[in-house]
Image (cartoon, rainbow, N blue to C red):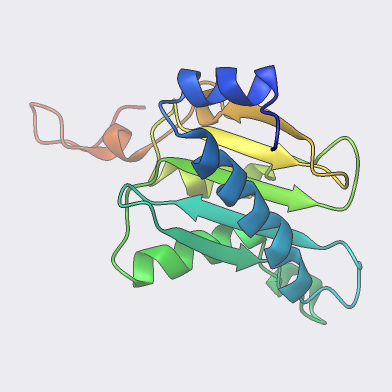
Length: 160
């Protein structure tokens, strides 16, 4: 029988997730690292999104010889999800081979913000499978999102 850590139980309660959903989400991100295409940095990243229907959508970092053209695992997963018709998510997991774990980069945080609420949890897994969890709002304070571009009463877009 497997014991449940107090942190895992507390996080499941805090984010209204089942314990097994967090465990499976983390395992999906960890397993995804094996598919990463990172011949230049050798820095493997796997990501997994949890959909409202309970599905998991994975992504990996994909490097390119022209370095700026590479794509982070989080954006690969989000793009894959959107192309499959998914635009709402319950949680995101990101896994790397370092400890402490890495958080999504700034570009990914803004990309995630397009589709996710500020209270969505992002579970960040280290090389040993331990995690740190933060909400998107904690990782991207004072963010700019789609609602900032909605027309105001005068018919103008956003505010400056």
